[in-house]
Length: 341
Image (tube, rainbow, N blue to C red; front, top):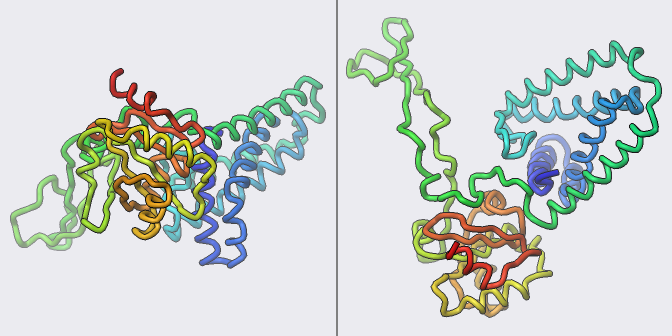
C-alpha cells in the first residue's frame, strides 16, 4: 500500500522476463501492471486479516495456498535463472536476495500446509463485526493505495529519500574489506591480505563487509557534451524527472511550466532529466519553452529516484531537500523556502 507504483515496476520486470522466456502472452499484462499490483497488495492484506479473524477460513487458506505457490514459483525462477535480482517483496524497506526470497516463501508454504492439515479445526463461521472489519480493511487498503499512486509513497525507503546527500551515498560508508581464497598444493586457504608468494593460485575474492557498499551505485546523467553527474551536485538544482516519455502524464505540465518560468533569474538552476533520446528531450524542452539544460539518464535510476512521471526533485549541493509528485507541483516560493529552512 505504501508503494504500489514500485510493485507495478517489479511486476513489469517479471512480465517482461516471462514473455521472453516462457510465453509471449505475458506481455499482455504489462500495461496493467499497476492495477494488478494494487489488486495483489489489497488481496494480501485482506487475506491476512481474514485468516486472523477466522473469516471464510476454508476459502482463505486455499487462496493463501495458491498465492504462495505462485510467489514461490516466481522467486525460484528469479533465483535459479538469475532473472529478477530483487523480488520487491518488502519494497525498498527490506532488501532480500532472490534465494532469500525463495527460502522465505518456502517457510510460508510450510506454514500454510500446516493450516491445510488442521483445516477442520479452523472456525466455520465468523462474527458480524469480523466481516465488517474485513470490508473496512479492504476499502481502507484500496484508498491508501490510490493515495500512494496519486502522490509519493507515505514512507520513502529508497536511497534518494529526502535528507540524503547523493554524492556521499555514492561512497562506501567504511573501507571495503576483502578476503582472498587461494589454493596451494591442493589446499584451499582464506587470507585477509593478498599473498606476495607467487606459488599461491587465486580462486576468488569475497567482500567481508557488504553493508559498507555505497547505497547509490548507478547514478549518472549526461548529454551530448559528456557526463554531467558531478555538476548535479554543485549549487542549487531543481530537477524535473521523466522516466518514460511515452508514459508521461501531461495533466500537470502547465504547473511545471509555471514553476520553471518563475525560477528564471533565481539562484536555482532548473534541469530536465529524462530516460529518453536527446531528440525527445530537446523536443519537449522547446515545446514547453523551458529553455533549460536537458540530460539523459537510465530509466531504472529515474524510477528509483521518484515514483512520479514526471516528478520534481530539489537539490542543494547534492543533498535532497524535497521531492514532489506532479500532482503536487510546488510553487517557486515553496521551493525557495526549502533553502532557507
